[in-house]
Image (cartoon, rainbow, N blue to C red; front, side):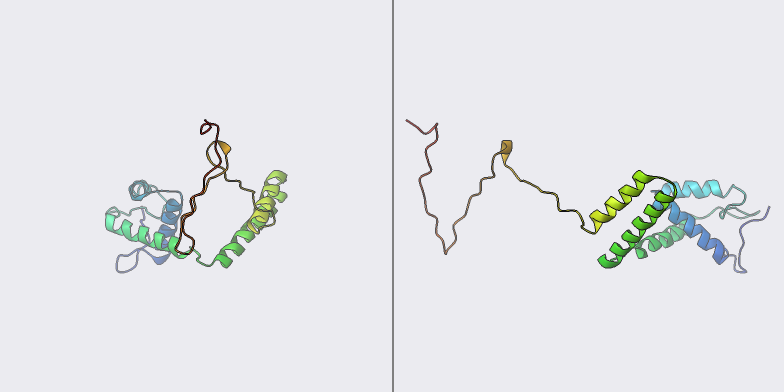
Length: 166
């Protein structure tokens, strides 16, 4: 029963290490936390053909080594985060156009339309939603203007209401 490919120093082959990081990256993107990743690796060490399989006499993966793989996967996630708004917009537009093409090819017209609508909203083709702010019970919002040094407070007599009437 052969184990994982190793170098002369006993380390795993670079391609195997990269495949392991990719697998942990996929798990992280699916929402796996450290504990679930450890469980996954423990199961994979027993499965023939996996990147984690143990050879005869090999010890299971240490917690420290799993931490190294998780850190490398997390670094990939962080490095993939684009900070430029312009680049992000271009990528999102390209992704929507790709989804649109895939949806049309599959005959999913509603999905294609949703892609077009989302793209149009993203680039601002639709007018902004009209928002009306109101006070309690739909009444207008009352503002209190505080006095400044330039404009001192002037007290005015408000119009009498039905409760103020004699």
